[in-house]
Amino acid sequence: MSRIRFEWNVESQQVERFDGEDPQAKRRRRRNLLLLLTLVCTFLAAIALALLFLRQRAHEVETQFAQLLQDTVKAEVAALRIGDLYSFLNAQDPNDLVWINKQRAAFQRYSELKAEGAIGLTGSILAVEIDRERARVLVQEDLNDLPYARLWFYRRSSGGWRHIAPDHSFWGEASAIESARVLVNYRAADHEFALQVSAALEDWIKRGCDLLDCGDLPRLSIDILPEAAEKVAWIDEAALRLRIRSPYVDIARADKPFDGQLQALVSTLIAERLVSEHSNKLEAAYPHDAYFLQRRTIAWLSEVFTRFDRGALLIRSIADNYGDDKIARLLRQLSATSDVSVVQAAIGQAIEFAELDWRDFIEWRLTLEDELIRAGRQNDWFSLWDTIDEGARLTAYERYSRGAAAREYRVIDQLIWSKPDGSPQLRATVKVSGADGVTEEFILFNLVNGLWKRAS
Picture 1 (tube, rainbow, N blue to C red):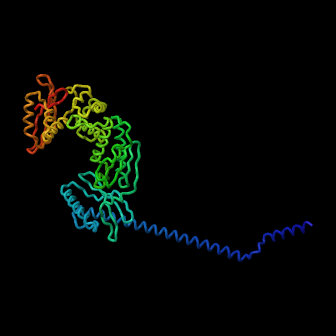
Picture 2 (cartoon, helix red, strand yellow):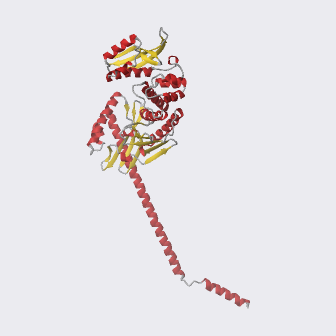
Picture 3 (cartoon, rainbow, N blue to C red):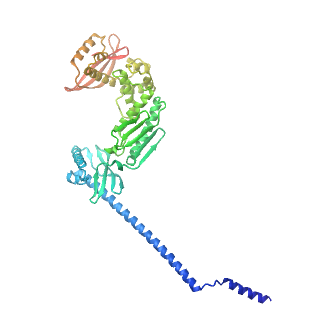
């Protein structure tokens, strides 16, 4: 019995494993499926290879265009270097006659700079940006042994790359740099410039507000634009929004695009705003001493920001010898018509004994005298003189009657002493430049009720 059951089980298992399909048909089906997969894989591989080839080819074409662009730039610089006007103009856009004439004038300026030995045309390419038929190239040139950079624009046609007029629409993508006190909006071509502006102004605002009371000052917003009409101007002074023209519209320092000239312009506007905020928006009245003191304080604050000499000698001497806080005190005590005796109140020491540099104040007073004579403001003019002193009064009348020729004054030295009657007197050594040349004069000022008044 057991043997029969075993054979039946074996046979039943064999029947279960048998699926009824022809083994040859199954092999053909598997072979066809494998063939199909092979064809699909081959097709996909062919597409991938084609795409790779096209990408490689496009890269090669782009590389060729980029190399052609660099060769064009170097050839253009070489034409400037050797003085080949024909080759230089041949690299320009032939369809823009205004641009051709501008480049002809530029070629002449380059020739003059070369004759003076003031320029080095290295042809170094600092940056390249290509967008299909458009390109911009940052090209270095050395002026007086300092590295500068110009942004040149090009357009590609069947004739190759041609130098075109600046293209403001191809200044790059918009971007922004945001810090605690400053927001700088710019476009890609001005990236390095924007970084330097952001860092400098963040530092300036911080230091300025440490020195003066800034009140509830809004965050400073800077828009860097190539199409700006002025180098620097307020868009909204109350909201502290400033516009700066891109330095690459003309020429910029390659290593320091936010250079001394731009720093002077921007720092002056920032200093004016901070001084105005601290002094409750006081507007000093010309020709009072308050006008000089306010303007010189702004110049001093610009010096603090940029570390460039702006000639703020009197205010600088107050800060150096009596502390920065005395400048803040001076501004708080200043009225629209204050005279220079307010300095004595600010530092808490008599003027005749104070360690102060009066040279820029004397220069301003001498220049002011000429301005008042030309304007016919006789009373204001005589108020600058010590008319109690008979000799000074007679000199003043004679001086006023002569009128005022165009002159420039530079005080090169000052000395304070006591007159025989014990009253203080300042002697200024002055270089006077006019139509008759340069002369050196000694001009005396008497201290009258805390005011320096001219005595000779």
